[in-house]
Amino acid sequence: MLGIETSCDETGVALVDNGKVIAANVATQQVHSRWGGVVPELASRLHQVTLAKMVNEILEDTGWKFSDLEGVAVTRGPGLIGALLVGVSYAKGLAVGLDIPFKGVNHLEGHLWAAVAAGEDVPFPTLALLVSGGHTELIQIDKFEKYRFLGGTLDDAAGEAFDKVGGLLGIPYPAGPEFARMADEGNASFIDFPVADTKRPLDFSFSGLKTAASREIAKLKDRGNTEWQKDIAASYQKAAIKQITIRLKSALKNYKYEGLLLAGGVAANKKLRAEVDKITAKNRVKLIIPPVEWCTDNGAMIAYLGERLLEEHGGDSLDIETDPNLQLVWHEEFS
Ligand code: KG4
Ligand code: ZN
Image (cartoon, rainbow, N blue to C red; front, side):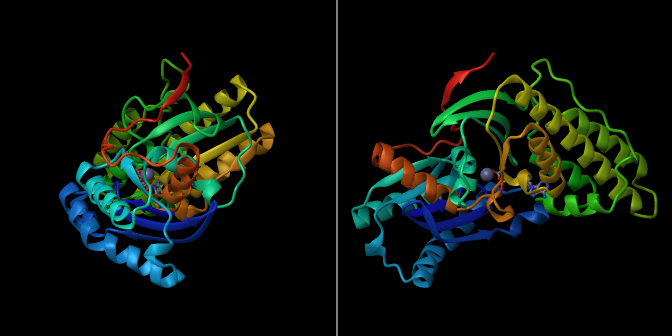
């Protein structure tokens, strides 16, 4: 199975054979950093230039031929419509040309299975936290394809808030990784940022925290030395992670989970990983996190999930739509 990911600013390709990832490559588009966010038009155009080349390269590197492919899986949403269309159109063309099945994959569901693609086992039921640039959701996974929605963000996604506050601190987009490095060197007690209360205890809200941080930055920005930037980063990171861990602890109290799974770009955050590690040890649940490079967008999670879905349900019709707002299908909603 060939897997393709082009939902945002990463072009990802991967080959999977019987649940095993044979090879995976990701190219991150650098052009967006100077604009402070992803420019959709540029993203689509770059995928167009990069994707076919990357597929040829991964086949050459592994010694596979196009004729060895038994299926092609691609992210069909959610994401930027133009960027998605590049991947989906390429995949449909390949499926027709090679006369192999085509499978459209939900990007969010892909993230949920990234750790398993990397070789981890997930016991059920598992509590999953999906934290990325576009999503912050707590999900109960009862088994493969059975997801229950427990809570989500009421405003900004965790990664989006890191990116926006990072931007105010002068960090180019996407700010997350550099933000975390700055935070490691700062004093997390510099400012005691508030942790949001939400009406539903498993929902999230990052906009108040973001506004509080931007006010502090406005006050400090004329100060000569830059120590305060590290301190703000550390204080912000502490409050953002505290909000997440409070929700995780209370979800673990509500239900008997066997595992806790982190997924999405923010799951690459070392401090978050360390805090969640402590929680799982205390609650005696298994911690499941993908390797750092598979927390962010990649083709391996799409290839892995695509192969599994193809086995379960067969291929999709070539009429299937690309959907920028594609949602996970909920098994049952908790109120
Ligand atoms: O999953 P992903 O690659 O793309 C989406 O599907 O959104 O996540 C990207 C997000 C960005 O907001 C980025 O700043 C954030 O993940 N991120 C981090 C870290 N690494 C990436 N946020 C905090 N700490 C990190 N170490
Ligand atoms: Zn993603």
